[in-house]
Image 1 (tube, helix red, strand yellow):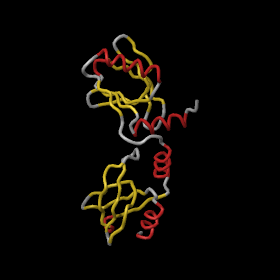
Image 2 (image 1 turned 90 degrees about the horizontal axis):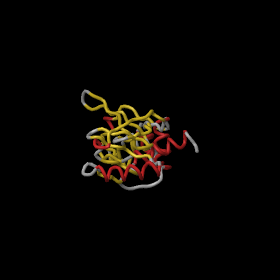
Image 3 (image 1 turned 30 degrees about the vertical axis):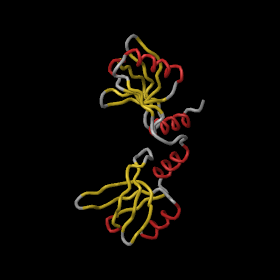
Image 4 (image 1 turned 180 degrees about the vertical axis):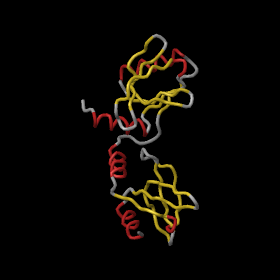
Length: 180
């Protein structure tokens, strides 16, 4: 197993590790940064390819190593393709309905894929139009598939996230599955 891990380090290949720590297992995905003795320095990623943290893992805690698998290859491919780096842009709406309507009208015209937040939940989608005091959103799944329509009262919107890693990857998937 160590030779495979070294190969993944040298080729900067994305890998999935199943760890056996105490009485439970954990599956993580990311890149091996270095190997020092019996310890890996590992850059852990979330399912969208964004770095979560760097951690040290004892090699004897690794139960299974997966690489060149469909999920890892897809994530690696998307991570390299997605344009734009940096932090997402947030527009906070909870202070003014007028500001929210202005921002939503910009999104209706631009057809930009964003995340609409309502308290602690959010919907990824494209603003279609304003209907009375609500927004009609064309929902999009994390896999870039159309997911029906959602209507949210504008007064419940707390913020909009634009150009974050999730939105960029979902937008890329949407465009790959639905070419214009």
